[in-house]
Structure formats: structure tokens, C-alpha cells
Length: 232
Image 1 (cartoon, rainbow, N blue to C red):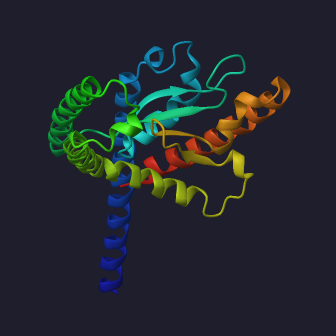
Image 2: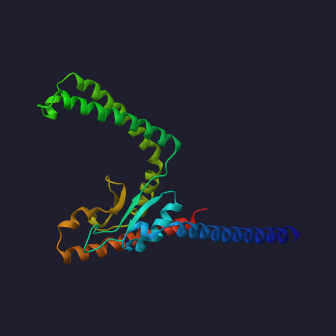
Image 3: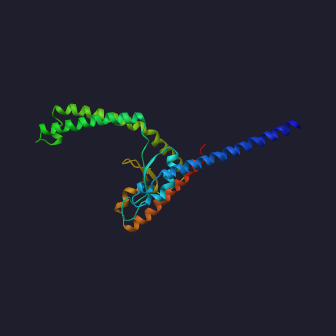
């Protein structure tokens, strides 16, 4: 009998400790949320204040290790015509060094291009490719792109974290293709697939799509926030 009583009290103690730990974790996450929230300047994120709509998503992504640089909720009368969050991976020391090396080769490329242009002013750029000086320039291009690739590889973990979140979000979710969220190659922005077509739609069509696009961003926001507060 004593064994079962002792075991019962151990279970109670374990459950109490777990509840206290969960409560402390929640308080800690809430404090982190407040700290990030206070550090985000919405006027810096969207010049006319539209970033307020997606502020919570920007905070949640930051807490998931995905830093954001700018946020916009989308507009009807000026671009962007859809919600957009620009992602800027945190710079590592290696990325900075690789970027600096790339910059030195960019300077050399500019100097060499200027020299070739001066040597063959009558030739088109395509025709200059057959000139011997182009060999040295091609070598500089390769070195430049090599260091750029190395710098980008250092930023890859941020993109992989975002891809993982999007994969999980769409695992059991079905929406129209143009409504789905994607990471654009230009500028690294999280936006809707159909964003590229918004400029060519009528105002009525644009308004309908904008509402659908905003709703999808909000759904993703709720999903990421849940991940933040459930993450240990």
C-alpha cells in the first residue's frame, strides 16, 4: 500500500513540475515576443503604415530564426498590390568575409570592363568577347560568383527554416495556386504566387485577390505563432 501511495505522490509531483515548467516557458516566450515587438519600427517597415497588418507574422518569423527586414500588408492604389514580407538572413562572420572578397573582385571587374570598352569603343559588347582581354575578365567573373555563392550558402539555414515552415503549413492545406505563399527569387520576399499578376488585373479583380492574399498571410501568421508558443 505504501508503495502505491509513494508512487501516487511522485506522479503528482512530476505533473506539478511539468505544469510549472510549461507556465514558465510560456511566460518566457511572451517576454521574447514583447522584446521583438518593441524593436520593430512599423514606419520603417512600411512607409504608409500597411505593415501593421503583418506585424505579428514578422515577430513570429524572427523568433523562429527567420529575420525580417520589411513588411507590407498590400495596397489597392500602389505597389505592392499584395502582402509582402522581406526576409534578410542574419550575416555570419564567414558570409561577411566572403562578401568582402566578392566586392574586391567586383571592383576589378568594373576596372577591366572599362579598360576593354576604351580599347574597343567601336565594338559591341558581344563582339568584345572575342578579344584576348576578355579571358582575364571571365576569370574575374568566376571568382566573383564563387565568393557570392559561398556567402549565400552561409545564409541558407534561414531559407531552409522558412521552407520547412511552408512545407508544414501546406501539408494538409489546399488553396488556389495563386493564393499559395512562396519566396520570390528577387529580394527574398515572402508573398503570394499570384503577386506578379496583380499589376495587370482590373481594380475589382485586384481587390478580390488582395483579400484572398491577405487571408492566406493571416492563416500562415496563426500557424507560425502557434509554433512559436509550442516550441520548447
